Length: 222
Image (cartoon, rainbow, N blue to C red; front, side, top):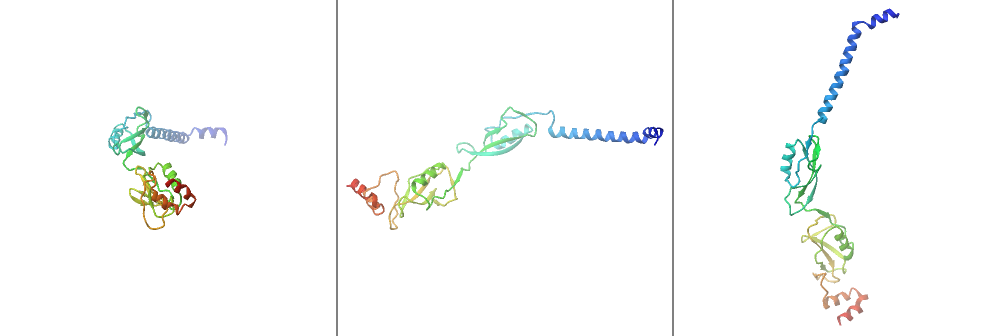
């Protein structure tokens, strides 16, 4: 192709029409993407986070909606002295400036008492070990109950007056009671206060199962 033909074709109306169409398409795409990004990010618009801490969840939702914000419950806590559903914490804090549509993360109060799983202590450990494990879980112990069995061996655990087994959920606000062996052979059941000293009869009864301590206890009783 000689130079004249090239110039003639380059100046052809069809070539310029194609160039114009391609330019218009590229410009249209750029503008479309820009508008979509602006709408998505709500460019230039702002919203101030209102204070919803201390409100009920319903009032908090209404207040946030008015401010063009969303609500998201992220966590819960337990305080039996405060109303159920009260907002205990919010993130971001009041006064912060965010984009409209932002989700405000809330921690609310619940009346469902926290629970922990019953540890595997039944028929598995001594009184001292069981006490340490239960107290480390935040559980409070009542006076122990004693039944026939190996002395001070854990034979059961009660919560709210009912026997529980390993894995059962126990409310942390409720006291638990260890059921221990009293050292008796027969089916007689003794319920003793672990904090009170044993009587002479109880000490004599225990001698049968603790021969090493016999001399010491007899001397104390006499």
